Image 1 (cartoon, rainbow, N blue to C red):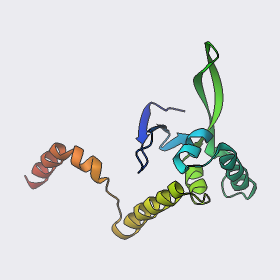
Image 2: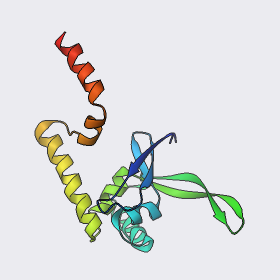
Image 3: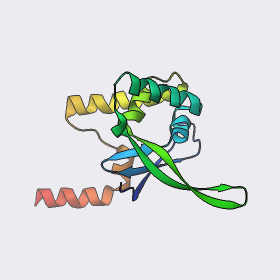
Image 4: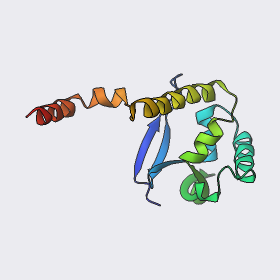
Length: 143
């Protein structure tokens, strides 16, 4: 799985950013990262994943192995851990009852609404950051 790109997710409360692996046209998070995003404990994430798989809402294709390096004692150790794609992350987000999960659902519902009503959704922050490119694109379209 190609995970060359990293997306940074930051909560409304300004909590530490979470690095999200991006590859195969989706994002990938570990159980620990999913717990951080939704403000819950890892066992709750595990419970939701097991329920989602048991109910056949999603299948195991939403899970991939990811190699991480972590410090254990005085040494760095490579470990293979499970990472979950956006489909699983979304399914968990709609099951969790926490303030951050509610913020996530509000955000996700707005994005979905934009796609359904407009046929697209805009990332206003990215648009502001790329204003020069937008001006060049506008000039190219008008010429």
